[in-house]
Image (tube, rainbow, N blue to C red; front, side, top):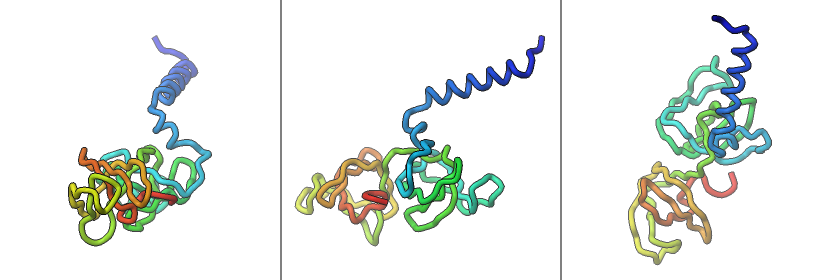
Length: 166
């Protein structure tokens, strides 16, 4: 027994609507059209393509394998975002692979110090290599709380990319 086309289209619509309504709030917010660039987001997939233009027909500039890497959103075109990565590379990413979890990347030359508190006199916990990425906590007095694979401490804000006003 076959159903008319409009029944299957209606069923498909209700499934899609249900998926949208049950998606995590952060996923729904990443598609919010009222956000004005620039702003921060992070990669929410293990593999994300950066393209030379806003569409699947454009060539791939780079393939990222860095879940949680922070990116700066510079422009919006429909479901595509023109982004900048911590190295200054710019290109287009589809919004489905971008999330709102705030992350930061260690920048600069040589390792950054992670301390037990937000001051130079706090105990040294670890030295973190440039390029390391972690979940960003609160920032204040020039220090940010950072969680890198459950290694939690404070890093000088000037050693982090993905913090402050983009």
